[in-house]
Length: 121
Image 1 (tube, rainbow, N blue to C red):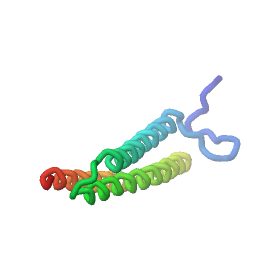
Image 2 (image 1 turned 30 degrees about the vertical axis):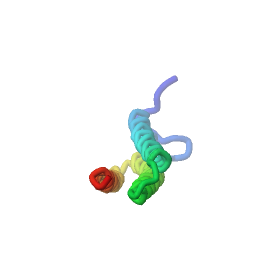
Image 3 (image 1 turned 30 degrees about the horizontal axis):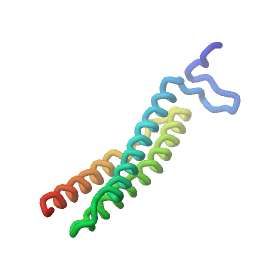
Image 4 (image 1 turned 90 degrees about the vertical axis):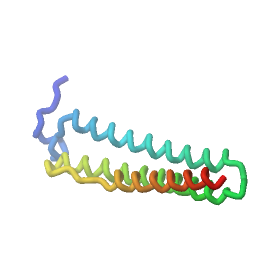
């Protein structure tokens, strides 16, 4: 079995991409999916394990933010994977992503709410 040459065209007329770049794109996608699963698990855990108290509203908001972020990260990861795949095959520049700032802000909001809930309890 021989590896296709970089720059060679496939049967459908698209340029073949070095398999290492395709696998790296897939690993990045899978890392984002693990992050999304972690957010979903965190949201479910907060909703399930936090005892109803006078601060139950914080738990509900934290849980909801985690679940929404998990959904957004999963959908955005797939979109980013596809955009990178298309760009690699076209030989164009790789697109950026909004996943990093969105995830950073979301985690910061969850952390701030959790800190407030702990201080008030």
